[in-house]
Image (tube, rainbow, N blue to C red; front, top):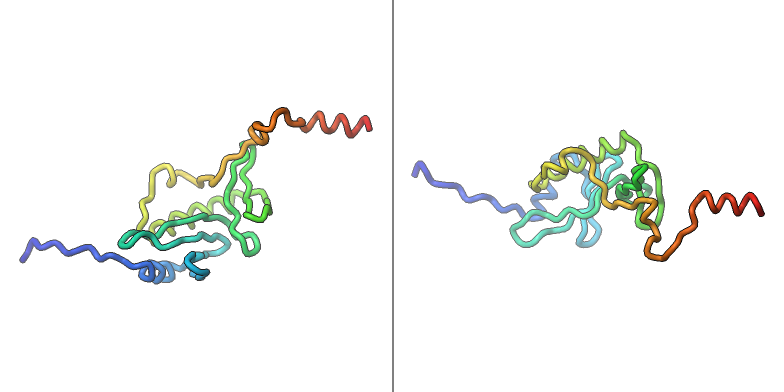
Length: 151
């Protein structure tokens, strides 16, 4: 028949991984999680529910063997790993990370939302004035310097 609709092909997780390799990403398996790498950017993906697209976990810049996720500190963007390594994020890294995330979403057939396409989105927001707020009064940096000078 002329007007027959073709059934959409449901891709398996392995099909998605082959598509990623075809799109220029390097795929490394580690148990149920798969690390996708291009350049110095990496992301972790996991299989989604049966018949659905993979789930994208944390993504960021490789710092050693770990993925450094983007943290907004209000005055500066930093990259932080799970082990506690921190480094300042540079503009080149942010642009590369943004294009990596966009290309990864496209290769996985995930929805690309408008607010995500505007620029790089932080994983966490941790402003210096909010840190340790629930613990009571914190020592301010200029007060700590006065004590060191007088001692």
